[in-house]
Image (cartoon, rainbow, N blue to C red; front, side, top):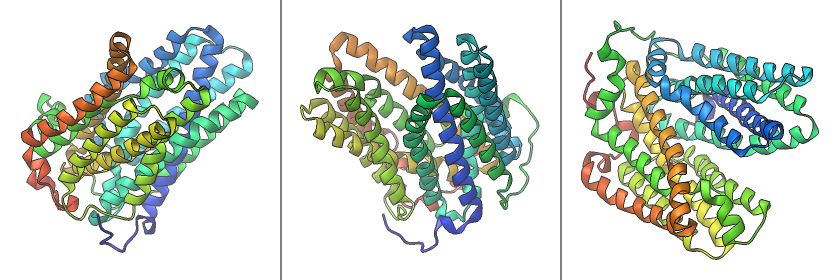
Length: 416
């Protein structure tokens, strides 16, 4: 990695406005998730309801994946973002009014989680697809990394801030979340980008499923997306962190908090670095190496009897995952024609969600049978096997050199 281009993404006002908008909306979302989770558990006392919140948020994105791609490709992505943030602001306001009136209930919270899940599914796809329009082409990899710093910063700060403010007043959390969503929507409105109006192809079944077809015919994009899918599916250990904190390391909730924060800290540090350094060569091989480092870090975490070593392993895991994320997202954005970027990104988002959700289920089910340490150890080894297998199955991905040289014309065109 080298800092070949002296230009900075911070010199481009559209990206700066977008960055602050993403910090605001992600912080608001993370705070709201903490608040509704805690309030729901206070209301029902049933841990199953906490799982239902996650399920309620996942279902809309799963059901609407093809619609999300179509909408993102056919309409102004700034309008989509501001609309989603307006919906999120209304949901926070509904929670505020329900809490003030004493009408808040478990059913209301789950219904709001469902609506929020749909809004977030549209919002995240639009956020990813708009980034290449905010900066010159050579800066796109750094812009992707910069966008990731916004997400990781909010993911670290948001839950802690939400929990602290909720302890003072739940009303204050809902009020601040509403204000943050409104602020994000206003910032997006002021983003000015040079982008031609997307051509709206006639709606056919071919255009509806074009995202899947394009990915299938593009070995670079298919390889990058599927590599991440199976690596996270096998190597994810987040769901088992409470077991490691209490049973393996004999510590309390503070240890769980540190273990949960460690990957995000590593990811944020790496994302900050990648906003200054580009992948000047061997980007494909670097991606494979990063996923291998993810697997090795998982193995070290599983085998370590030292809490400090385990913590450091998770920091490295988060940093290596961020390298893979930046390269994969840049390949998807630059390797896809703008008029199809929404549909392809929506499919990518579905794969990411599936890998996280199914990965947690796999880890929990396997740990109930084998134990936590063997489960995580096997997952890390499985990730290394996937890396070796994908090197053989997708040689074009390994041969990718400079990310900015990847162009939509080099990928197979989708069928109209």
